[in-house]
Image 1 (cartoon, rainbow, N blue to C red):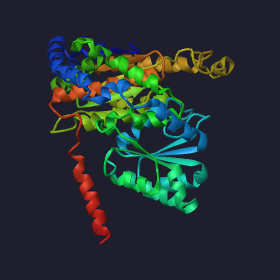
Image 2 (spheres, helix red, strand yellow):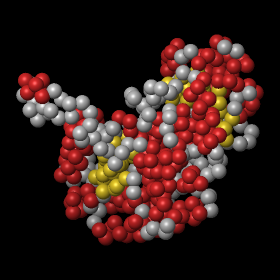
Image 3 (spheres, rainbow, N blue to C red):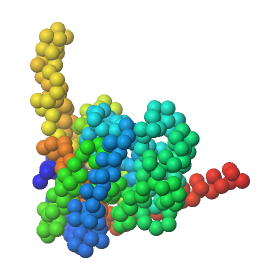
Length: 437
């Protein structure tokens, strides 16, 4: 496979009573069989389309044409959307970013600005930094009625109409939403904005391998086929009839939920070690929390970044409550990066760094964190990739989407809805109506 999952650090042999024993694990893993049957059937009859985007009729060639137009015509591309309409594409584009994800695209591509919040100051600063004549906007909302996203669009379109013209809106804005009568589609139709269909069978947090995530990824120069190919590699054992103990997402779900049931583990920490994966934890956080947090069930996802958060969170993890499971994502680092000058190091008494490369330190930090967590009896899983590229990110995203759905089955909740958040949306709209009265 494209990645390897090592769960040895989650069992009693490694972390004592903090881990699962073999009988507990086997019992919970057996419960995963029904979830795998559900996924297998959904993959076969395409009722779970997020599983088989590699077979989807969506024309990547047509999407490539849209991406190429943005590359050729714009210096800046602003992505308007929130939650699943933002985080998937933002995470993918981190692969191409020379700096931190969510800031800029690759140096030879348009600068990508992922605007998810409705902070007026952020938009004011954005509008002073861009040239309207060389800026494109992509607005994404599955429902076409997301208040925050529509707010972003109305403010941005108003600015562009003022600085350019009303006719320019159709040339600078593209919308992504479900088919049918929707506010976003109505605005797009009024001003001649191109509209791309959001797959109606795929919820936002599962939409990263659809047009929602792939369009910004392609603008950033990433290979969409390789992304989907990596995802297909993860799901292949399922289609081939694999049992739970031969399907990595089922193993991960059984351990996560098993630790929750039997050891009171109430949080799951995801910690990659490369800056280009910094947003992967944000994407996972929404996926896990919004899919599982229902009817009093669920565990709290925590995103971290090594080695940075070894200096902000690790003290708590090692010496605080033993109520968390850890997943560290390792990628090759040893032998990479600049050399630490031997003369400068020796003069400061830093012989252990002299002549080493920066990647050597990162590699040592990865291994040391793993060993220290396990020595402190903290259940720890290691996922290792051989390269950070489109195939590996696609594979990992499919792994965690499948693991989340299996975990939902173990908890007896629906992974695909989010009923509790609707109350807040209704109240926010009522407050606006009352304030305007």
